[in-house]
Image (tube, rainbow, N blue to C red; front, side, top):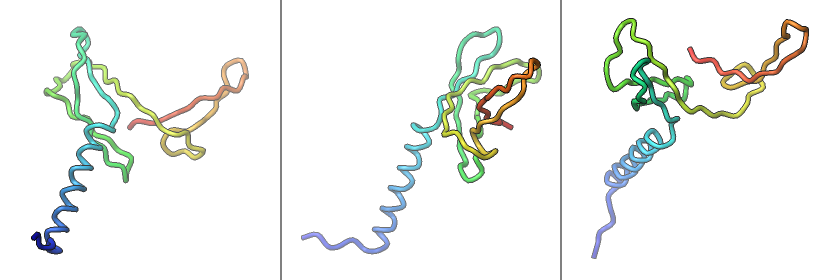
Length: 109
């Protein structure tokens, strides 16, 4: 017969499941992201790390970028439109002809 697992064993198992679930979310649910060196024309994968509490991401390149080197960073981004100035939000402006134009904005700093 099998004995009942100890409380310590249960805590360790739950911790392992949480870590595995977190890794799966980071690897498969973050936006796709690539960069291309100008003149190279080839897309290179990058690693994207996300810190949700501060709505931050970090992009880790597969190689060191050189000073003065020009690159293009492209990534897929989606979000719900916010009605506050937080995240992905609506805004408007008046063009040179006096027409009010509406746009959606996200600020990447």
